[in-house]
Length: 171
Image 1 (tube, rainbow, N blue to C red):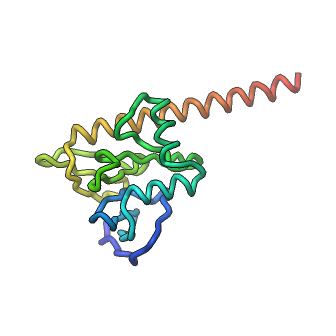
Image 2: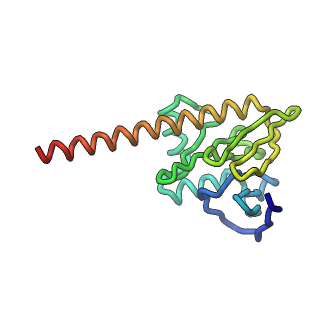
Image 3: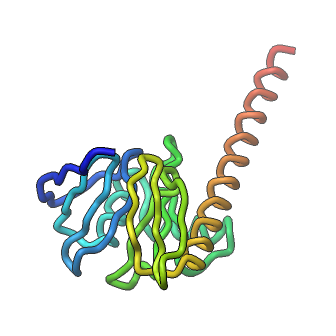
């Protein structure tokens, strides 16, 4: 893997399929890791997540409630950011906290404990260290994977129902 390029500082950021992680620098700045670049955004992580939920047609609170209804998870809920590409992120701690980062489930390759922290490796072989126990990360991955699975099953059910309705219309 080649060295990561450092991109320009930006005032906003649109999460996409290349977004790996959204990690706080301080209360007003965030480091966004993409496949081949690191960007500094002049917003906190929560604001970036909120704006992206809105950009893709919902609100953070709506996405959070949807996860709660599907999984029964009330704290540190994973969020479906964008439906068509199934972009799901999970928080590393309570989203109310300034040190909360967000990790892309779609781009996650593996994770392991490193002292009291975790090392997260992405599909592009990039690794980041987060100040969260590996047990917490494992639990968050499980929640996000459950969310992904339930959403996939619902989409399949809808498609099967649509196919069934089309077949009945031709009979």
